[in-house]
Length: 116
Image 1 (cartoon, rainbow, N blue to C red):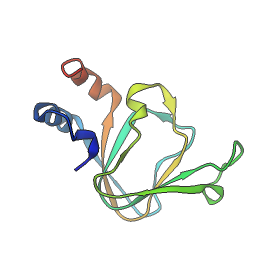
Image 2: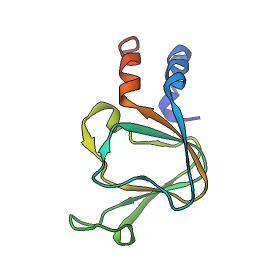
Image 3: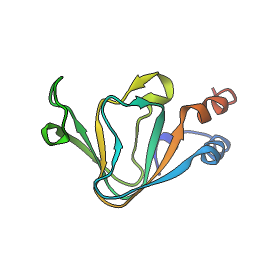
Image 4: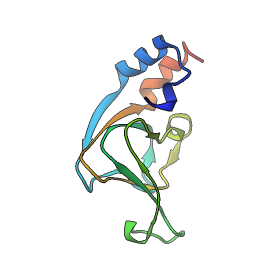
């Protein structure tokens, strides 16, 4: 259901599914934190997660952050981490019991050699 796979060939999708792993998050668990090294992309399979952005350069708590978006089944985030060495800029928190598929940069790069 994810837009990420919309225009991809079936063979590519199957290859990606082989290297994905699942991760379960409980309500209140953080999927990502600002400043952590990013090397994974996430796909929401079940549950609801919320994205919060810092309100300024000295915002160190989610209680001072701004809710940007709520994501559900079929949504994805973190794709920039597959292309660039970077750090996360937002908190992503599980609002409900959530099952996310995780795609690591080190696992997708060999696949991209065959599907530019």
